[in-house]
Length: 218
Image 1 (tube, one colour):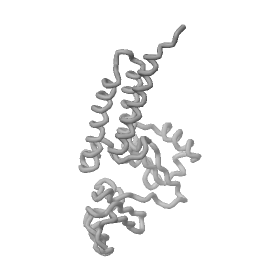
Image 2: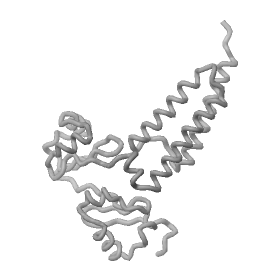
Image 3: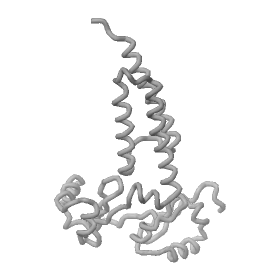
Image 4: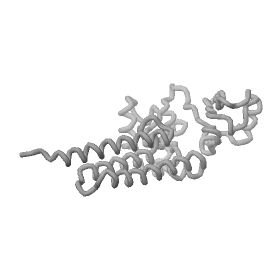
C-alpha cells in the first residue's frame, strides 16, 4: 500500500509550526521552560497540548488554521502572565496563595478543607518525601502548584519571600507574623532602595535578605 506522503508532510509542517510558536511563547513570557510552577501553568500546558494534539492528525485543519488557533491561545496566556506580574490581586485570583496545613506542630482542619485535602492524603504526600507522618512535622505548606513543603521539628524554618519583583506580598508578610510598618523599618535600617527597585526580599526568620535590580542606585 502506498504511503500518503502529502498527509505526512502536512503533519510534519504542523509539528514545525507548533514548535516555532511554543519557542516564541517561551521568549515572550520570559520563561526558558514549560515546567509548571502553579496550577494555572499546568492548565495552560494541557490546553496547548490539547490544541496541538487534536489538530495535528486532522486532515481538515491546515497549518494556517493551527497557527491561528495556537496564536490566539498563546497571546491570551501572555496577556494573563502580564496581568499576574503587574497586579498582585489578579495574581492571587489566578494562582491562589499557599495554605498552611500544619503550623507549630498542629494540623489546621479549616486549612485542610480549603485545600481539599484529608489527613490521609497528607500522610501519603509526606511518605513520598520519606517523612514518617504528620506527628513529626512542625510546619507543612501546601504550595500553589499542588506540592507540599515540609519542615520537620528539627529543621530550620522556611524562608518567606516578602518582596517579589518590586511588590510586597501581603499574604506572605502576614504569614511571617509582621506588617508593613515592620518591613518599612527593616528596609530603612538597611538603607535599602525603594521597594519597586527590589527584585527579591527573603525573610528567613532572623534576617531579611535583599536582592536589588542591577540598575538600582547603590
